[in-house]
Length: 158
Length: 178
Image 1 (tube, rainbow over the protein chains, first blue to last red):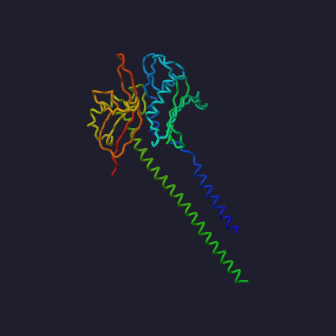
Image 2: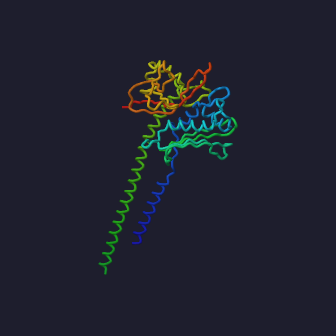
Image 3: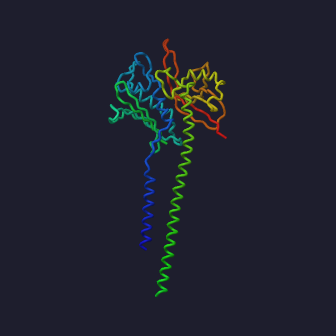
């Protein structure tokens, strides 16, 4: 009888360990081409914000313009408002997060840091739809003229 | 007395053998469950790999010399398509019929967005750039893959040429390998 109980306990322990290991598998952050290409395309998009030379700024340059709080040359528009609305509109048009679609939500995050190993500060966070545990990530770091690091992170949740 | 002990011993052996069979069956079932999960993972990985491969081809196409912006719009950029170049390519597509091994190539401008009620307007030499769809190569395809690209062109503004980049999807159609 004692042997029977021991076997039962042993099998139960093995089963519980197996189940807990299977459930507690870390959530995979999958980097993929589509999301990375989206980040690249967004950074290259030409905005309505103009410099003094009357060249329209790309989103990448607009991020630096917003950090420096330099107004756009044309109508002195606020670069941060423009950055926010441009990214929000592009993400809304590019990712269909309506119920029933494979993509449930997205988040576009811009972090800044003053050095490679220094902590990051969140500069902008635009989200849409629903955030889930299953997501794909696009990532692009670059430096601005002030020597700061800017890290773009885009997550598409499914 | 000897007979009782013999019977009790037989019972214990019987109990143990039943127990061994039960444990064996249980472990076999757990093993089968693990194998099934692993097999489904393998199938998912194969499908994901196939999709990733097709997507890689789309990305490669966007960065090929026939499509890419090169250094024309500042520094060299990835996932950037030169719209002016693509319009010229479209006019001479007969020379590239089997060049990429795909059945169709389309570029659909998605931002700035068109009127949601309006149909897609195919780009021709007369309406360019007031259009949103460039069919570089048309043909029937079994499945397609698409990826985001920056669609850049030169525009004349106050007697100067300025760079304009918009967001588009490069859609590539494939035929299934028989």
